[in-house]
Length: 412
Image (cartoon, rainbow, N blue to C red):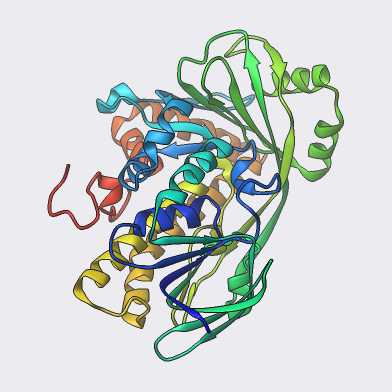
């Protein structure tokens, strides 16, 4: 005997769980299938990664009921400062330039994960199955038969739509045989928390260097989250340094805009690759988040891109369910891809282009990089366009990102 659902979400990390929260309360029955138990140390939703939340992402979290559990654990980004190490040129984008309280927010992944874990058990229409490993997918005319393995043994369920939100190494993508374009940047991101001598005052910094960007993001209190991108061999050496030597190397790379770094937290790392699935759909199946597109962290947009996937898909599903339409129809999946593909491709090209541009040490390009930052800082129109993109408001904006509740007829 198998259990029937309207939507089965494979992957209970931040993107998949957010989709479950977004769909809750709209008359659908949802299964959330996660391979790793929510509180397990290996659950990526509870690691120390520093995530920058675009303003659109904050509105999405508010619309799906997660923001109250996050508000006390996030830090507002009031200014973004981008500079080119060893060269002239810098750009500053301030929230006050746009009459906004913040350009975005910063939170550790574990803080967002804890907020999600606090909400999910209260959702009667979202059934979390963890640990649960998806073993097979069998699309049929009116549903997908999903074979799973749990602690109780092998089971099956059916869903009108299966959503793969299971990350870069997606099982759903592999089972469906969906082709993807991959590129190894041969870089590693080293992450840590540091405490500078000077207050960050809500400022986020990105230092662009020939070996990769170094970002410092403001945290609650005096801490800053560091994302230091470098070649794999260099990153390995950074991880082997003692705390004092690491802080010294970071100081030389970043400079003294926040004074001297005084304390260092636990370090971790992850390799950087680019992945894009040109056709992220199959019969009654769809990929979202990192399963469909994994981008370089140079602009801190990867998680925000996944949340916009959530907002668009939730909007289409709620509308379809309300009208009695088939949630797994080819028309719905086509509408999703038509809506999301431009944003995904633009962000992929934007981040990949930045990586390639700042990796070049050809003299004319070095001059153009500096001139480009100067132009951005001097021209309000260019600065506004960049800010809108990084705040998540480029192109067609979904209801949740505009602060409109799903199913509502007007803005809040």
